[in-house]
Length: 456
Image (tube, rainbow, N blue to C red; front, top):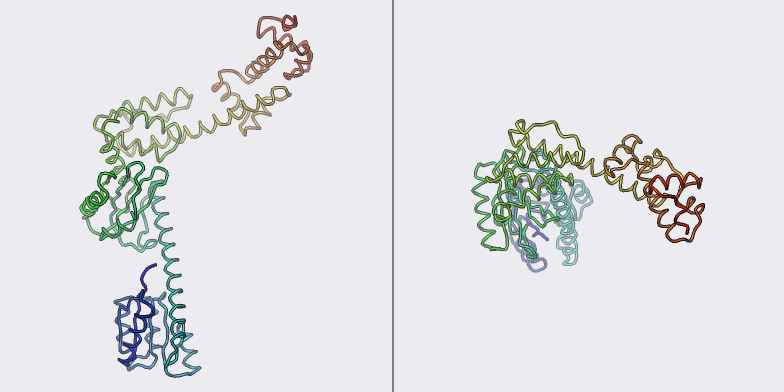
């Protein structure tokens, strides 16, 4: 739990020193950040030290305790106040409560009463600290998710994060397999003078660090941080750093640059496999991971863009997916390539979903081949239109729907005939034909031999 800062305002020096001594003995985790002899001094010191808890005497020269509280609460709304007074007056108590005072202690106060009041204020401060930290963590996590996965600019930083920044830069830290990095977030933030957001990508155990600043020295600051990380963790980690970007630009590019640097430094001998990694990823339709692999490829001096383009088009063609209609000549900038890869991912995703539906249909046919059904009924079962289902089924299996069902039924019929346990009439019904004569004709057409020949 964070240390709680305390300001004591009491015009009597001996009283003030006695309270400080009492707190140091009873609450060693509290930090006395300031002591004031009057209300005006308390207001000035509160602005500077920003205490979490203020113990205020009511009767002080000049501005009294209650007036000081009203001014302090204007800029420290979350601070907790405990009033200390020698006057047992209902009017004072009412005024203190209306001013937002948490507790009201009479002089001379009993030890137990004072401890109880401070513990109550302490818990209230900690509760607010916990809530604030949770909200801050959630906002930072949402910011990083938007940055890494939605390709959006980081906007309204001052409004949503209370951060006044004009530029940002991404660092990626990848620990060696099996190596556990201890206290990553705490260490990084203690080693940096700037504003850092540290986010862990759980799926591949990488730490993503976003540094934000108003100055244009971010790349130097991050290089200092990089050296400190390597000094602390040694060869157990690899680091990639992107280029600084303006916050109103696409900060995700800094992330991809960091990924490219990380991959290039850690896998020199793996260049030959990168294209295969990219092609494997793009057919899954996962945009984020595909773009990560793409950035590794595109920043590699030995990589040929023509090879990437024609391999992707080949993958689309063999799946009978209509291409994007873009020629290689049209892909001039990285932004052009981003859009091309994203569109291809969308098409592969749709294709994969359709393939899943076809596999469901095939399994359904395998379970229900002995029943009566139509193409329309099966298409409806897998939530596809009959026309689209029919076309996709033939492309995928190489057979029309009717031919596929017939082939399935004939293979089952042959298996039953070989067993020599059933009559032709029984087998006809068992594989979905209500007319034994029609079944015999279909069987003979399929195998070029009458089913009756298997009866002997």
